[in-house]
Length: 123
Image (cartoon, rainbow, N blue to C red; front, side, top):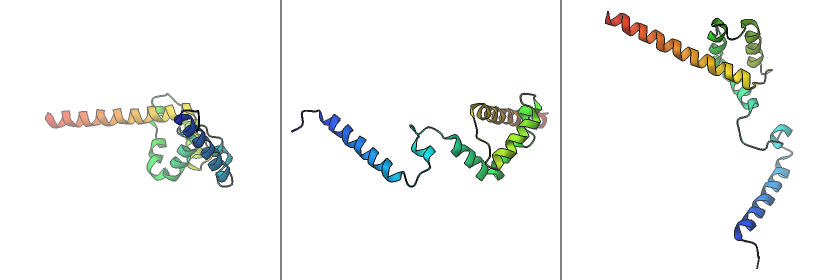
């Protein structure tokens, strides 16, 4: 009979199971994935998704509003877009923020144009 509480027994069993699975997967998974400590969003996965769905997301990089408004220089942004398209660029926090601002600006532009169309129809 164990003197430890049942929760400690379960915890010990889970740790053994995880260690065994990690050993088994070592031959299959890339080292970067094996070293991961959490399940938070991987920039590698985001980069791969952008590269694989470029036909749908490439419009974000064509005539970007963040460049038009002067928040970002157009030439370096175009270079980053090309590198993302070919899977050569990792996305860091700054680039993710720029893409978020781009999406926000486009949403504002769409809202502004729909409001203007409504005003034109009413007059």
